Image 1: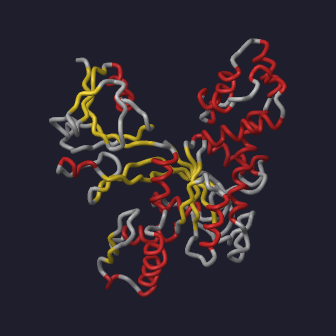
Image 2 (image 1 turned 90 degrees about the horizontal axis):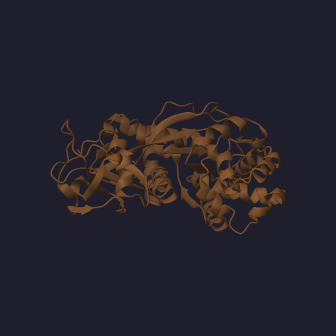
Image 3 (image 1 turned 180 degrees about the vertical axis):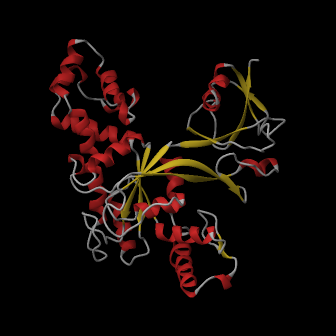
Length: 397
């Protein structure tokens, strides 16, 4: 799974990305600090199931602290958008091509309204963040429309002459965007599929918009929430866009306390609503003031910096994934003695057989049955898994 961090230039995208990954990326107060996409590993946080077995897990990937499991996912931060990106303006073409591989998008906006449409710093409250959300929707929709329209007349004639299924043909044409036949089928519902050669520009635009929403679901990171005036803007955008998940955040605050934790100055778990200072004597006055600001104005007020909540909701609410642990009824360790070393993210509705194939093709091919390790109940291949299940796969020898 890949999540893309998107938005116009200079709204804090790279700070948000670094706050999640601690990757070494350039952060600067000017447009296009990011030219090539940055790629890194972020982690989603779940309650670990090791407590239910009275053990301490040993993750092969990610980590577990205080029985909070952090499962790795891939994150990409792409070049900032400017108006007309779909036409190639700014870093537009590169930005959009880099997004093809993303399964979901985190749209970072400057909720304080202190960045204009070109990504230049302006007085807080000058720019309406509602326009930034609309702006990205338009750019994405027009990008999809451009791909759909490319050679449309010839494509439609070929499909008609060869008596192809329009749904399958469209799926093949747009597969590079992650479009599936099921998505196309639901998008075309109610349209005259027998007369597709007569579809208008508006028809194609509606198809593009629908498929963009299905293939690139989006969550809004309302960044810079600590700047005066940001809260009023947050209320307005929540009213304007009731269908979006909108989370207030301060990427700068999350990065600051993560860096402090990395230096063993504080004890902090990503997503917590507080931190503990380990040795106050090691902190200078500037650091004390900054940490106190974060505690009083961000953590106490919003219950977190918002950054961890955003990646979690993008994973579990937007993409509807669940976390499943492989394990055995009689043995939770792998061959090296690591307890519950693995955790996999699967789509809601996945079956025991889906999980077997996720682990390894051989397990799927030789699948006989599975065991719900928590209940010790034997289940079949069609058994629907639940979030935080522990499953043992039994195969033919």
